[in-house]
Length: 293
Ligand SMILES: NC(=O)c1ccc[n+]([C@@H]2O[C@H](COP(=O)([O-])OP(=O)(O)OC[C@H]3O[C@@H](n4cnc5c(N)ncnc54)[C@H](O)[C@@H]3O)[C@@H](O)[C@H]2O)c1
Image 1 (cartoon, rainbow, N blue to C red):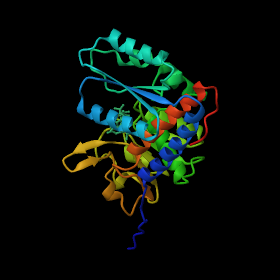
Image 2 (image 1 turned 30 degrees about the vertical axis):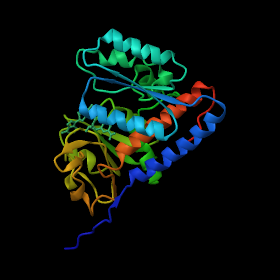
Image 3 (image 1 turned 90 degrees about the vertical axis):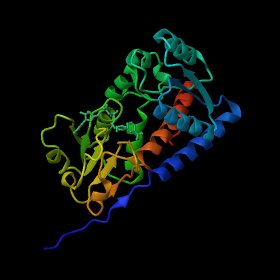
Image 4 (image 1 turned 180 degrees about the vertical axis):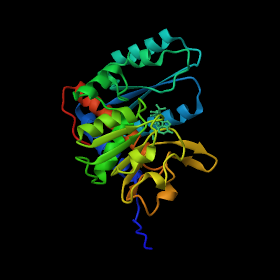
């Protein structure tokens, strides 16, 4: 019996992200000469350690891009009215191009209502009702960072999307749902699977591209992937051995055509796209077209 083995290429998302961040920084430098430096305001409520790490990484990236880093850290006991007032003040501040409300919020706060206080022009996470509506209608707007980052990875790898069969595993609000729409707009044939999908492998096996965003560690393995397919792992899990994803990557070596590592692909691209969105918000806010990054 002969078995055909594919050479699996590990996608270097960190390198792709670095290139985008360098282009953003160069453009910020140009803008800073004659106009207002783009600024990102991060709002962190409470002391969740993972959220603190994510916000710190985003703020560092903002400063490295030469942008203004504005931060509001509110205590866990803050009221909904106080968070709303903080968002309203940032919304009115011309030095603030984008506002990021770090999730999850403590349960006593009404997260959807607070997210929707962010004006769509400053909604760099792309999570407001207005931004979701603009995405659904194909109108100009800020798109969620992780889905945008996945598209940029596929583009950087010259993966053809038009006509491609994509299995989108997970339809969460942050990743799967917006990403399925973005892929459809790029001409892919998208099948969305979720926790109630009866036969997951039957959905993923025919796919040219499998994107996984479920929050279930190691969900996807060789039984789900056709030889040569591109596999994008959005999952992030902290384990004793370090970060892990929703895909059993080691088992796909020799099967997948390309695969994103965890860490080292979707995470860095999410931060890069946050910078792109902040720059875009600043350009649009100044009445200019955004330069492609
Ligand atoms: N890399 C990044 O920057 C980044 C950003 C956002 C989210 N994430 C990660 O992506 C993952 C998903 O995030 P989310 O916010 O979309 O999650 P979510 O909880 O909103 O959605 C999870 C989705 O997975 C589906 N699902 C659950 N179990 C399943 C199963 N057994 N089979 C098939 N589908 C199943 C659910 O039906 C749901 O649609 C998480 O691991 C999260 O940590 C990573």
